[in-house]
Image (tube, rainbow, N blue to C red; front, side):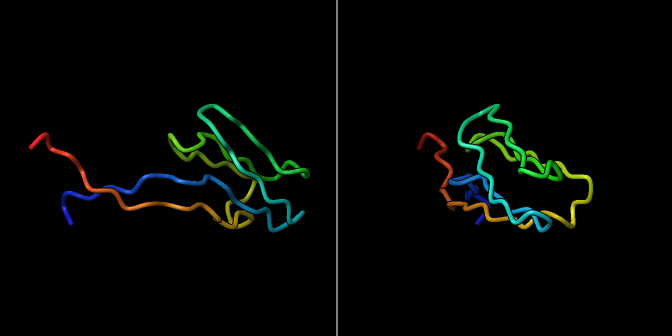
Length: 72
């Protein structure tokens, strides 16, 4: 398992306050919910989240387990 890595397939989350589901589709695609309480950023390159209260975020992101290639 040491040669495995998680890759982001979908970067999305839901706001517990307004129930809006938001998705960042590409790097630097900053998206906030309609009430402005949460945001996500990074697309499939990275996941960055922010919120007034992190308990308001429901993570709906999807990941894929990928084997590292060591050039062998």
